[in-house]
Length: 99
Image (cartoon, rainbow, N blue to C red; front, side):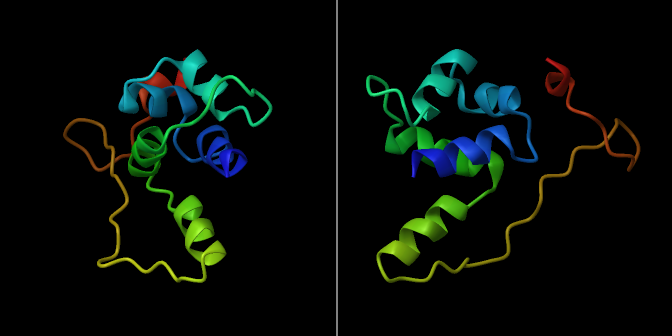
């Protein structure tokens, strides 16, 4: 499961450093917690929940539900976060994306 969350952060649509800023966790700390081969650092449930909220990626929740014999269904469709340049509808790049 840690590998799935690691993939969400490192290969997701939102840059990993922006995810770290959003969940208020240092980049190096989060990468260590997401490393499935680091036996001394573990990803906490609260951090995983914050990552799911920050990334809007529920694939790890779907995996957990499937493994337990359940289906995960949204109550309402999730709206994609929209970031635009000030005063326009033109998409803007996150400044943190270039860190």
